[in-house]
Amino acid sequence: MDELPPYVISGDRGGRVIERVNTALDVADSGRLVRIEGLCASACTVYLALTRVNRVCLGPGAVLAFHQTTDIKTGKTNPKANRIVLSLYPASVQNWIKARGGLTAKLLVMDFAEARKHVRVCP
Image 1 (cartoon, one colour):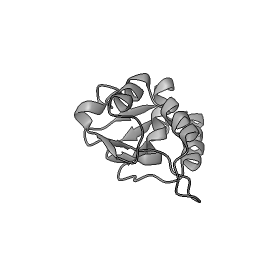
Image 2: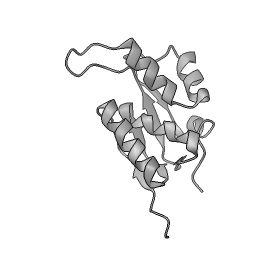
Image 3: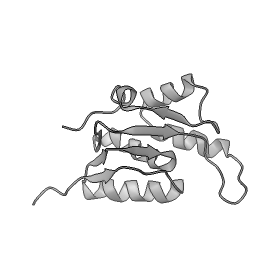
Image 4: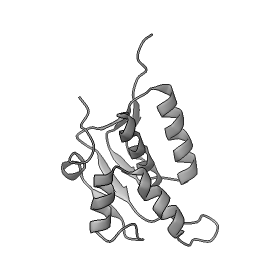
């Protein structure tokens, strides 16, 4: 069987976390590699959970951006949802976020030079 092409992410500003979790699970089940080649912000970052099964890598233009979760109906943050999302990230990414005050309304941007310390670089 031929290997499936990678699932490429670039210019992804996020969306609904639950939708991204479902997509990430589908991608993982397919055996495809997630290749982050550009911006992966907000809900997009849940793909980092796939580092646990070695199914995600970074291209040289990768930029990761993190912030707190927000309830789409109320506009308020949900601390429980923040903890769940944070738990999806590799431990070193969690520590990087925590060292900068955690998931808040402020966008935390991790450029490629920093991200490559936490997530493998694509071959």
